[in-house]
Length: 217
Image (cartoon, rainbow, N blue to C red; front, side):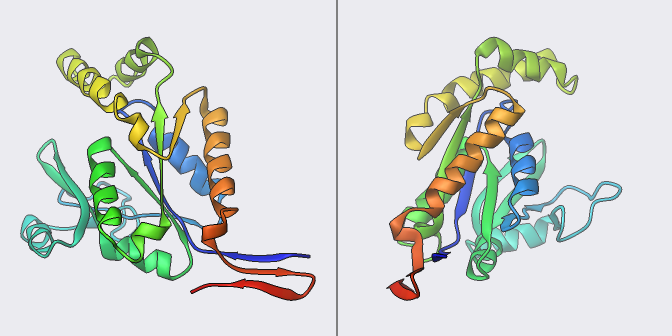
């Protein structure tokens, strides 16, 4: 049997709020045993049942600001008075251990990560692949946001306005998926991973009929 060793992937998944990126990301983690979720930092208090280092890294504001001053974050944002950010070290540690990494962020966060990767980062640059999950229609996106029963009408309108701007940026991603349902979205993401793992540039070692044909760092 042929043997292939593939360099690990950093899968960047982005979408407007309500498009379903969190759901498809969680399901993908369940079907891909070599895929880890990048654990992000936050300044919000831990909720019952949440564990530090598993659900989030819970930091106070001075600790978060210190990491920000050290340029330690790949991306960061403030949401409803709480700060969130993804440490470069968190992603690199998993990639260097041979694990694929899933990073689910908004469009602004995705742009920040891609800027770092494109700056010549020796680990993130080769590993990065990005996917954008497009809502099937504006009516469906509005229905999903309204159905959450979490936001006031004014907040929903602001989210929809932001979504229109975010959707315009889909051509900047490697892949675009038009959401067609939970199972269909999951299958599309699985196909992306399968395709990327077959790329020649990601192949570190390839053995056919007992002969080593490829060996890369």
